[in-house]
Image 1 (cartoon, one colour):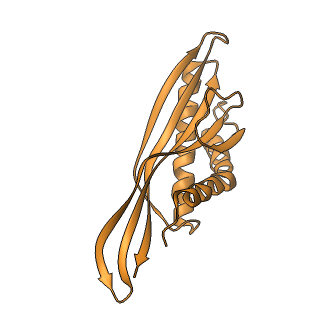
Image 2 (cartoon, rainbow, N blue to C red):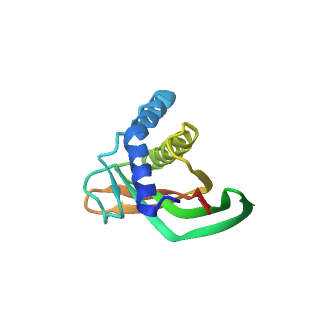
Image 3 (cartoon, rainbow, N blue to C red):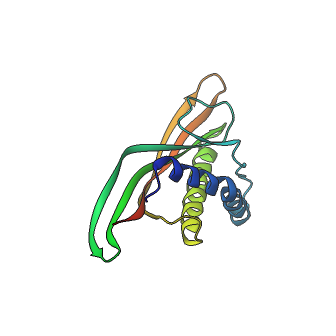
Length: 163
């Protein structure tokens, strides 16, 4: 049976909880330019409005969960692929806009690498397709700084054999 969306999200949260920190540490070592990525304050399900604790990582399902018939049949039954649309959103704040932009790119890379390495390492039986990044910047007048929602959106595919 294909994993239900909640189980898929639980797996992604566990993957990020256990491995995102390693990817962040690796990027800090690689760049070594005085711009340090902090470990996430929280990794949560669902969207939060202007979270107070930053950086915060939010796992948000989007769109529909769609079954696709692959046309593959045999003694085992039929193979169906379930497609889940998911966003991993990173909420950051920073006093300087340029540093915010650099941090955003690095957090997005850390998320992408964590997801791809988790898949390849056997942490989850899924495939990721159509991965893309998005950024929305907000000026915070009360702190003379900037805040930003950035996201890594992707389709996650899980296969199911139906007899």
